[in-house]
Length: 115
Length: 114
Picture 1 (cartoon, chains in turn red, orange):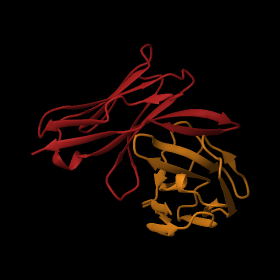
Picture 2: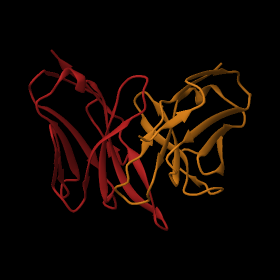
Picture 3: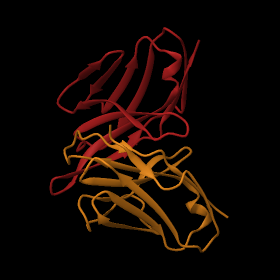
Picture 4: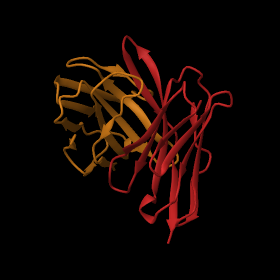
């Protein structure tokens, strides 16, 4: 059973416009959410995160919104740039025993920003 | 800068071979992780380790084992490789064990089992 869902495999936007990537989750025990970006032939890199007790976190062009009641989060990129073209993974953190946590990833969304 | 390196970028092995994938991090991180990435399935956790000689099963540990003899090194072992283990393997490390702790990934090893 998939606990973190990214239902859009791909998204295409024009340069300068807003990109909105969505993520849904089912496990109410997740307490932190992270977004990673992955270019081809490279490992994922951390982009932005949000605690489950917050509803918004902003870092430059990137904003993550969390709707806990709907178990939904979204990543907004404004304005989108061609260099943002990559696969974006949504990940959720849960306690795995002791003082340890592990991440569960979604399947990813391929974002293409067209010049 | 945190650096996570993986021993090979590309690897081709035959069915039934024993395969070792090595991962080294240079930032004295406590935690290390092995994932595989497959099209349409995202990243799935195979095993992780919070300390030397400690290991925990992830979501898909079957067919794999791990070894962590030194803090900086985490090895993934395929005891008898099978074609369904053809995948991109990603190693990651993190400093802390908090919920918000960011993981740093290596570049990945693309393993093909023929």
